[in-house]
Image (cartoon, rainbow, N blue to C red; front, top):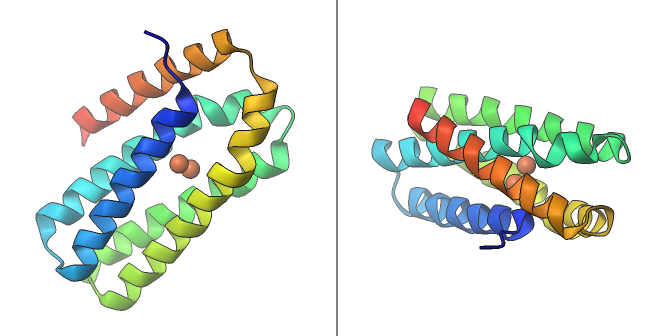
Length: 138
Ligand SMILES: [Fe+2]
Ligand SMILES: [Fe+2]
């Protein structure tokens, strides 16, 4: 079955957004844990598939995205430490929204032009493999 890394990542974004919505209506630790697991796996999978594949031609864009992942990881940690503080949750939601928009509106169209179907399939498999591995580790 043909897979598409961009569709795959978009699906992950929608999942993250729905978990963020649940958390902002009522914060609880098990939803936080699911968000943390989903996001850590998603970011790591991007960092081991799409990002390195684009780095040669789009180094600035990839570096910027990686810095944003760092910010998201820091806010996730802070949110847990502060027991779901609404101000931290809204900072996290904002950081994720900006990042997701940049990926979907700027990075994906460039990647889509850069890769052929075989490469897109290969990246999709790699993304999936890392995503599953990290989910199991957390
Ligand atoms: Fe990302
Ligand atoms: Fe993403």
